[in-house]
Image (cartoon, rainbow, N blue to C red):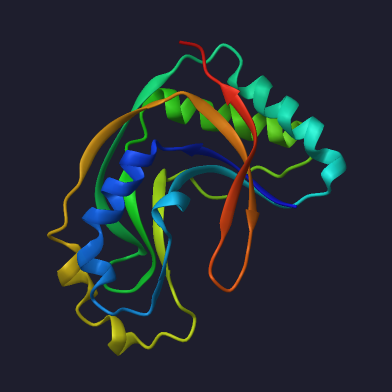
Length: 186
């Protein structure tokens, strides 16, 4: 199973983000777009994991979230990694509020205890909206930054759970299934 740990957004927020990014999708860029149902905030990517490890992973998630209260997560703005001039990943931003940073840090610690290496790069919370296709030529993305820059979006969502997700890859893109939801305290 291909697994990761994420915060899922309410369907109406996913749809709003999808609609706000329409100018990018209609630009004909060589980007594989994530459908609204697939927009989420990844906290930890686990990769290919045997089904027998699922109980210890869910226990680690439960341990990381124990005592964590629900919190508000500001969402706003659009961008690209590494830059709008040379995009590889298109994203909507999430503010790294203290409860999110603490939760992600605790999750890293708990996952390390069950054998998953701590991520080597800093945590930059974001919602992936699309990935530039491998065969894309730089000229095909020439005006991408100019279309991206004026786009706006601002919202705030209550984080109610942390979910263990399974990713199934296909030619049509990834589909995601919630394997376990660790509910946060009200």
